[in-house]
Length: 273
Image (cartoon, rainbow, N blue to C red; front, side, top):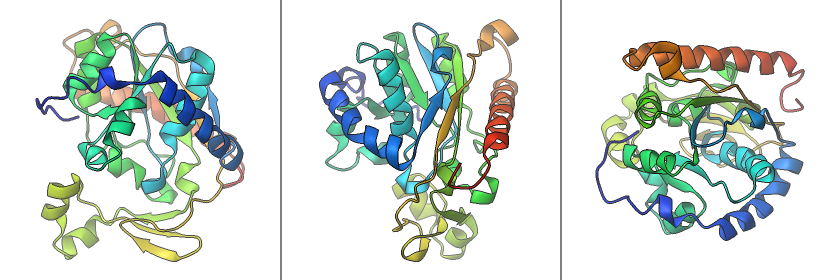
């Protein structure tokens, strides 16, 4: 997460429960009927503030947040807001205000700290673009590309980390490559980092247009998406407040990898589930 100190103090305050409820009502049929989504283990989210750490799937057309949010609000109601951290590029267009009002806030340490201090549940996808565009053949691998800001955020706020693992989203089309080699070959790496905070040029194959580079133009297939919320981890209690961040990150990813492996063992067929 960014440590940008720009004026983002109002992001958390803009959450609108009425608008959020309306959006959830609109997205529920999509995630429940088209993707046949299931979210298990929501009772593992403890009372009070916590940082839900999840793997990310589905490319540009990711439905991870919608899948989680529908079941979260159906379980806990709208008196307990869910905030999701997102890159600044999401807020570059006219929809920025809409995102903030539905709980999507800029991924800065300040925003995360304020949301957690309010007692909210905060959802973060540490792997970001690196994770969401991983090849379909590696869909069951947890890899955050060395990003450990979520550990620092949880430790500084003194809140537990709640791991959540998801399967199925990376089958919405065939993700062939993150395309780092292609970005380098075309000399786009520096420009992409400046404009989009990424250095990948994803290559995918899907329906109905076939091969796609960068922005998939294909419809996501109706793949069954299952998310499992795992028991919370109190890092300070388990490792001490002075524990090495990389060690803590490795432990969280190990727990998540075990959980994702279990989900994968329960999945009998791609897309069908």
